[in-house]
Image (cartoon, rainbow, N blue to C red):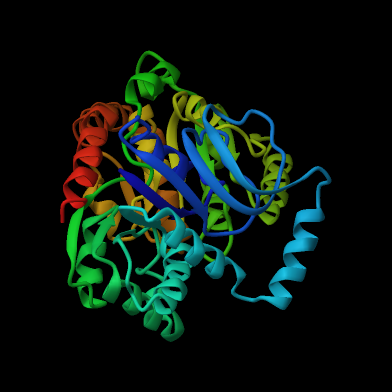
Length: 391
């Protein structure tokens, strides 16, 4: 079976989703939806179609790179800028040619705003004579971007032409119907597919979670992230934080500055992790009492699921979708991402209530094992693809 993925080639979610079907019965091809010329180090057993690409170290087994290799860093960006100026739709033209040449059994686009919209350009040119098209919604694809008129029109067109749909939460199934999807839902899956819980548990600190002395915090501040709200909430809990190491990851520059200032002002033990391997984040979560992530929009974040697996008590922004995993005040806290005082109150409760965090770790361990272990998810994914081809 030949499958052509349209997705971000440098994304860990793309690499892990594809890893579920890397077997001789699947012939996997990947067309990067964003022309960066890079692939994620976990990507394997796939042919990738760049325009220009940089030579990378640590490329996995059986990865074939198509395109023009460049030995000088930065030259690829220069060349792509020239091509884009002369041929604004050069990537959709390349994809159109590739579909005709490969004749895939299935096209699967992961994420909407780059992959889905790229498929729109190709579909229009091919008068929608396409193989079976699966589309996967990631995170805020429709929950957030669907609020804007220019995006809404494109979203409706994607949903009007794709045959099959995958979401990472039940919320987006309802939204997709509202945006005109009339095809077949294939199921709700985490964006990356199943989790290797057996391996992840090796990074989990033994003993009671209430005895851990770290707090891990997603440090993103931007159009969606609200890490500055977290910093303000921390300032209201200073008397309870002196014995904890506060660890920030995926940290925006302004958050880094404010966190450094907070550490100096109150003599807090704050550590900022630079961009690193996912294993480092997992080890930190596995030694953390609490995991905090605030954002105004998302689906079901992989970071939430990872924190649940690793036992860290989740304090998460309430984006409706996370209620499919978190029962407030039982196995986590859900708060308004813009309300500092509410977040501070919940943080104080999680710092003081040992029984709460220990019980939540037990519940979340069982919940994730039953729902998202790769032993459960991978067979479902393989079966899903096999059922589509005859249709």
